Each structure stands twice: as C-alpha cells, then as structure tokens.
Image (cartoon, rainbow, N blue to C red; front, side, top):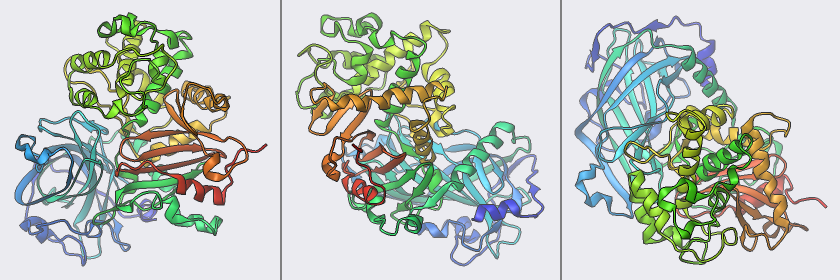
Length: 584
C-alpha cells in the first residue's frame, strides 16, 4: 500500500518553519500529467467538477518530502464557483438566506504524520454560516513524479446542515513547499448521504497558512496511529472471491437492493475481517473511503439512547422505571402518567395518533419537531403532540420525539447524580462508552438544541466513519466476560432476540419484524427458508441506512439515501457463502 511506502521511506523530512503567515502564491510551480497543476490552482481555471482521480495520489505517488504543521484558513472564492442542485425535496434553493452554494470559512489546525494529514479537531465544527457546519477528516500528503520540491495535500471534508444530520462529502486539494508557500485550494463535492438535498459543487479557496512546529502531541499521534490501523485493516470486497468463489459481490455491495448511485458505502465484517466495496461518487471513486463521514440518523437511537440506558442500569438498576412525569415538566400531565424510560426506549408509550407504526413519524407534527431548534420548542412539542390511546407497553409506534424525551430524562438524571456542570454525552457516552469501544473522534460530537441547555438530540445527530461500524461489530460479538460496561450493555440488548420466539411479544409489530431496546429485529427465516425462527438485531437510519448484526459474527452495513431500506438480496448473498439459519 502507498502509506506503507511512506512509512518505510528514508527521506529526510523538512519542517515548514515560517514564523509568519504564508499567503497563497503563484511562485509554486508543479505539473504532473493527469493531476491538478499549480497553474490551474493559481489561475482558478477549473470551472466545473472534475474526476476525483485528478485530485488523488497516483499509483506512482512518492512520499511527501515535507511535514505540514500549522493552521490553515480556507476562504471561499466566488470566481468560477460551480453549484448544481440535483435533488431539492424541500425547495431549499428558493431561500437565498441559506446561502446554499457558499461554503463557510474553514479554520483548520493540521499536522502531517507519516503521510497522513491529520486535523487536530475532529467531529462537527459549528460556524456562523446560516446553513452549513463542517467536519474535517484525515487526509493525505504526497508528491507526484514532476513535483520536485512541491508537495500535494488532499483533505476530506463534509458539509453538515445546521439542526440536522445530512452530510455532503467533499475534498480539498492544495500544494505547499519548504518555503512556507501554499497554493490556492480547490474543493469539490460529489457525493452525500442525504435523501432530500443533493448537489455537485466545486470552486476555489484562498488559503492562509500560519506554521506551528509545536502542534504535534501524543493525543494526535495516538489518534493518527489508530486511524492508520483502521485503514490498513480494510480489504477490498473483491478479495472475498479468494475465500468464497461464489460470492455475489454486486449483492454484497448493496447494488441488488439499492440503486448503486444512492450508495455511499457498503461492506461486510466477518469475524473481525472487514471487507468493503469501493466508495463511488458522481465523479469517480472516492480516494479516501475510510475518511468518508457518515451520518447516524436513527442509528443514534441504538448507539446513543439504548447503549446509554443499559450501561447506566449497571450502576442504577431502577433506571428503566423512571417516570417521565417526575423528570420532564412539559410532560407532567395525565397523558404521560405511567410512562417510564423503558417505554420511551421501546416506543410503546401508549400516546399516538395513527395505529400504523410509522405514520406519526412522517406527519406534519413531526416536521415541526425536527425543524424546532431550541430545547424548549422541541420538548414542548414532543410532550404535547399525541394523546393517550392505550396503556404503556402494549403497542410500538415509532416516534423520534420519544427518544428526545428519553435523552432529556437521562441527562437530568445524570446531572443529579454527578456535578450539575457535567454532560451526559461528553462525560458519560463519549468517555465511558464510545472511547472504550474504540469509536473514532468523529463520533465524539453530537447535534444539540440551540441555546443554553444544548440538549443532545439522542435519537439522531451523530456522525461516524466506516471503522466505527467495525468497532461496534467487535463490541456486539465480544465475550460476555468482558467487563466494559458498553460490552455488557450490548449483551443485554442482543439477548432480546431470544424473547421474540413468543409471537405475542409486544415488540413484534409486523410479521417477522420487531422493535425493542432501541434496536430493530428481523426474523430472517422467511427470506432464507430457514427451518426455525432466526431473529437478528439491526440498526436503521433515515433514507436507507442499515447495520445488521448477523449470526456467526457477521455484520453487514450499507449507507444509502434513496428512501430504500431493503437488504434482502445482500442477506441471501451472505447466506450463500456462510449459512445463517439457526440450527436445531
């Protein structure tokens, strides 16, 4: 692999030591066939999106001869900016105040470590822009054959809508030299995981570098090591053919269940071995698939809400029975009497409009909840939307608002038993769950309500990387003897499938489907013609996201955005190489 060549290289690394700002300059001269040239960057002559291969390391790329350490400001330039809406279900483009086509200013502290360009700050970064925040992920530095003393950089980023979870993935490339000079940046957005807003964009960024040789630290170096190990642990899906000649790669890549243009990434993890299909975009293959930021959407109901409640239970055994009316003022009414945290997690509160499990979630009422930005607005709506139709615990009705109420209860409960200044997400979820599970720093931020309270959304609003799916798979199949609270929580959740053999279990809301403990469950016996019920848990996210925890330590995942949650053909393809039916 290219990175291993960088690590083995004996080239002397020079450090950018400019003590003052280094402005973009036309003095940088570089031309490599098939790659963006310095002239194109300085003249701003690219007027529309290009093939990503022109921004990416070639097969003959050489190790960078320089280290990059410092803060770079990237400021959008309007000259030759390109923006083309492809899908706009909510007519965002009609609202000029959103400034959809304009990027925010990026201020990023970066350090190159063994060829990886690593951002100091990970996770969502809020900006003054009216619509966009952003996420920066690890990139690359390298040289092409005729670059001489010039080095190239490629930096993945994602635009994230404020108060939402949609992500639009892009890349920034620029050149730099040993004199502290840096070229203009060129950016391109060619993919997303977002059903309702899709666009292509490209353009230029004015750059300003302030070198900082003291930027390196143990924390960044450790994160860089973990990231590189995750990159090295992924194998092309094509390699499955070496073990299983009959492997249906198209189906395993999600293409038999989904439109291939809608898929951001898909893969399968077999007993810790991670196989992944190429991450394709509208302009070719993404060169840094392991740095592709992915939205959780409702995966957070499992990753955040469920894991947190079950982990806290180990210290507070009665946490399942906390009464909503005792903890949430806005829900202190007869309608909510008798509703517990367990009912909220299982979405069987007894309050609803429609008896169809999904109708309420897509109603106008819920649109108002998702659009609300303050905690007061969200919690008031969540507590007042629906009337009580039956006793708690009897019927599953899907409400993201229930999970928001649950997060509010758990946050208040956590603060009462700790310092009031502590935060459920930062101090418990991240420190005691996500970090021990080896989830990436991308997961260490969450969407919150605006204002002083800053309540985590809980039911959506996380971001993750493909490696985080592998980490969750490791936790799901960990031995029960593992003492980590997160692993114990997983074991309790996954044990739920044994209870679903009772056909009258209240979690079963449709033939072969159930929802319990913040997870979905499917009996795959009908799809695979199994002789006996075979229930499997899976996480599901808005638009077409599935992460399924199958028998025999197999995890399948696909992130798509065409309102399609089908994965039956992938399931059949997996069963063809490793039988999944429960044994007698």
